[in-house]
Image 1 (cartoon, rainbow, N blue to C red):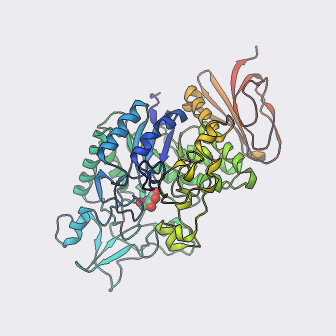
Image 2: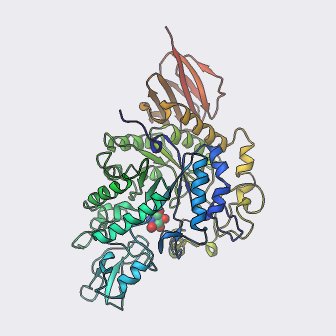
Image 3: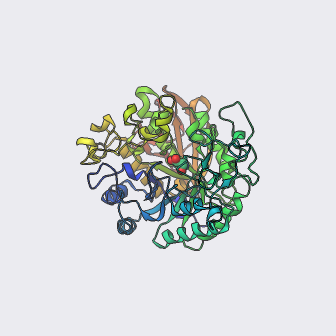
Length: 536
Ligand code: NOJ
């Protein structure tokens, strides 16, 4: 069996840099702020940070529109700050993963300026330009952010493609010079010591060569709708090429954002792992973010996801990110929402596959209510009140009970959650039973026992009666995890007479011993038990 690598065993923590910690009082988070909080992240026990984009950007999409790949946005700091971040993070044994936004650039990127300057510019084909058809846009493709995906450029009298905002023109992945420039840029950051990349909308890079119209369908969430603008088979050749660049370096990794609509598409995500060794190292499957709170649905998620993963591949799991409502809000549950968030934490950190945490999830942060005039996300501005955009899940990290939760000494770019008096790092660090301490203990336990990080997962209760239970096993090490998704007490009888010890639980003390897996479960109980010895 191949040796398990850091990105398989470790826990990865996503930071949305604008909202993590502001060091200079301008109201937006920055790299120095992240450096200040490395001791916290090390205390929490994470292995790597994935930074949402920090490159130079005019911020039409808050960094997902890069105008200079080779520099850091001045709002976040300088290249020297970034080098310092890498160095200090490494001294804490924390790795840094960057966001690679290469489906598109900003319209202010110098490549696009050249490309749009004339039809015969040598970068013209680095982007996707088409003639009008019957005086209109070349085809019926829609931008993910609304409206046609084509923007007319009067200077050269052609349309360019933008899958997102018109300020985010799509790169042409079929152009080899463009691809080489991207690889060169990747090497620049790999040489600086980054440990890998998260690839933004990796399944959208390649478009149909003939630019055929997408099929018309009345169903709003029909994947067929994007038949020719996403998930084109040629993408895999380019990902293989990109993987070779990563493999020039030791111990680096990639994780792909394989974007799919509800209900999610595990097979599609897994297809980006190739044979497990020749495409991406990890890929997100967002199915779980589209599921309701139900043991059956969570169980079906892992079952389908594991089934889709190639033999040499590895899965990963994520409950929240900067595009979706925060997990705790999605799980609903009213006054029980924190209990649900705790159970979800135990699930995330005890199933097989690399866990990704989204900043603030470890505090049980919820979506923040934001009034219309404070919305800054272009999606929220456009679709309010039908869709309020993504700002509610991007509000500042809550550090202490001082003004603005200790995030900034200035005025924060987004409102600070009103729950910050108790829902903050300092308060929860001092409370042994806080959700923060639960996360910390879970991470420590996962790190300590191979069964919990690389061991096999053997299902025992598959969602029946709103309960999930599974074993995790590595050689002689055996764990049993039971999760009661229900607000009612439950009983299980999972046999297995042996000496068991509670290692972590939302409801039991760690000293408790059990002689079988017949147990009464409290509402929302999540318990992790280790086998001490067999009975003779
Ligand atoms: C996916 C990113 O996660 C999202 O925040 C962004 O708006 C789009 N890609 C466009 O880059």
